[in-house]
Image 1 (tube, helix red, strand yellow):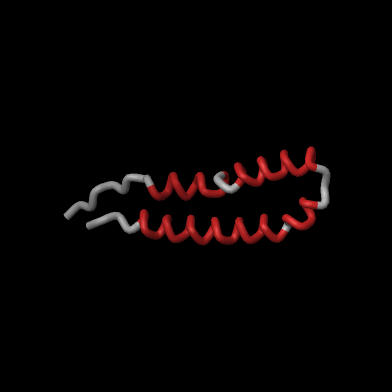
Image 2 (cartoon, rainbow, N blue to C red):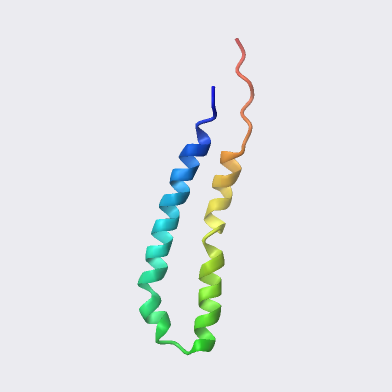
Length: 70
């Protein structure tokens, strides 16, 4: 039987990315009012932090299940 974890994980990743992009995009007005020297690190941080919550999902998706015994 094929592992159903990968399609499930793909859908969860897609949902997370949509939520994250909308959240960061909704803050862009407030971030845009800051000085460029503050904007740059905030956008760099926002561009890298999205991956941290997905780390456990990647581990779960790639986990090998023990074979089923008859």
